[in-house]
Structures are given as C-alpha cells and as structure tokens.
Image 1 (cartoon, rainbow, N blue to C red):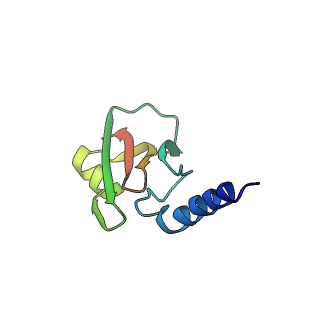
Image 2 (image 1 turned 90 degrees about the horizontal axis):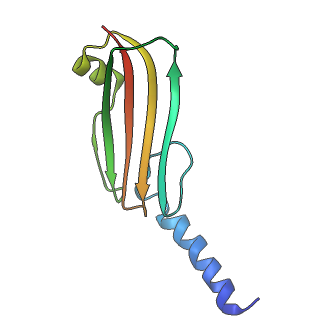
Length: 107
C-alpha cells in the first residue's frame, strides 16, 4: 500500500470521527454523505382517516428547532386514536438533518 492511500484512509476516518455527527437525525442507519430513511415505529393495521407530519431540524449540530412530539401532532390534526407512527430521517454531509414524525389515526 502506498503512503498516499494510507493517509487518505486516515483522513476519512479522522473526518468522520470529528464531523460525522455534526447534524444527524439521531435514529436509524446513517450515511457519511447522504441519509434518507423511513422507519415504521408502531402500527395496528387499522384503517385511518387522518394523517399528520411534523419535523425537527438540525443545522451543523449547532442549531436545532421544531416540534415533532406526539401530543403536538395529535392536537394539530385532532387525532385521538393513533393507528400508525413512522419516522423519516434525512441528512446531508453533516450540514443539515431532520427527523419527521408521521402519525395516522382517527378522531
């Protein structure tokens, strides 16, 4: 192996160690460059009439904002009986990440 190759590998590992989690959705598998996943958390199999989604965001791991709590989603959509919950994650280059919570249910 050449010295240049070894230095390149060390640089990538070092960069990932210090910068890999700057902005991270925090759940599910993460890609070093790009992440986009959907994770099913809960489901009853019942049909639903309403659906609501809300997201939280992170920029460089320095700023984080949003409300994706179950209570917020239930009150905003007037869902009383939750039949399904999914998380969607997205991240790019450790610069921006979000986690969205989607619920389905009935009144």
